[in-house]
Length: 186
Picture 1 (tube, rainbow, N blue to C red):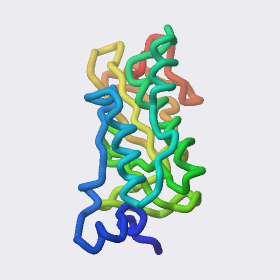
Picture 2 (cartoon, rainbow, N blue to C red):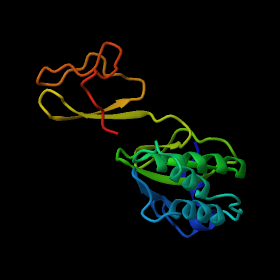
Picture 3 (cartoon, rainbow, N blue to C red):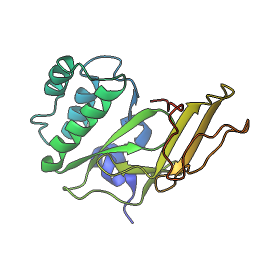
Picture 4 (cartoon, helix red, strand yellow):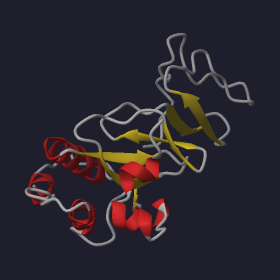
């Protein structure tokens, strides 16, 4: 089985005893603290492996986002990660996310030769190729009956069919779709 450190750390970094956490970029779900920070991190990781990060930037995504009136809060980071994932594949790298159960994106750059990783973990939690579907889904809402905030962390294949709040208010139909008076948090 491949170890995460073998894919994430350049040989000289492993020799110096550098840990995986030191090459992890954490981006809040709403976006970068500084524009261009994600692209600079990704380019720096590629350089650490001795490769050239040609085309590794998110300027095109930023320009498209500025012209998109439908862009919602939290949409830009997803578009940036999607874009970078596509740029990295032909360079022999994979953009990965450490599914740590938070609402942020802990991002890693893996040297994979174009093969998406599988079965990787870090600190007991999965690390997956950004382009792969998540193994879990987070669902949250405020009950329209009592106002209580409800949160579920479900396997990606699970549904909330016929789910009710503790107050008795029906929240989802038999197929798992939210009822008309239920609004899910983004």
